[in-house]
Length: 104
Image: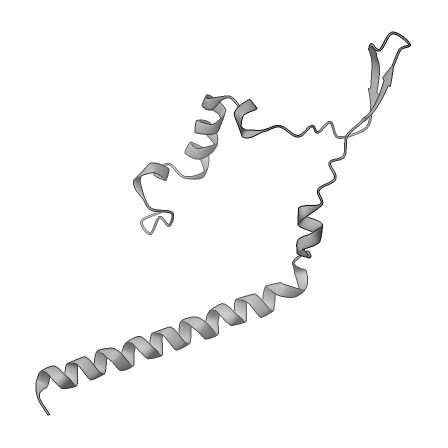
């Protein structure tokens, strides 16, 4: 057998072994995390905890009662500077990689 054929076969076996190990590890992570994950239906049906709002007869807000004051907003309603601040805090090299920052 030639040296090139032996080397090719070795790399093929190493690749298949690595792929098998990666599949086993990914399956293990999934099976480990699965019991704690919420069902998809629960993730799609979001109920924000909004405060109780009391209005006057002429439709003016008098008071709000509740611990959490959450209101859904669209991405267009968030100021650009705030989006850049989030990206800088989470991933300083956000625009320099394809989605996975191996250096980071």
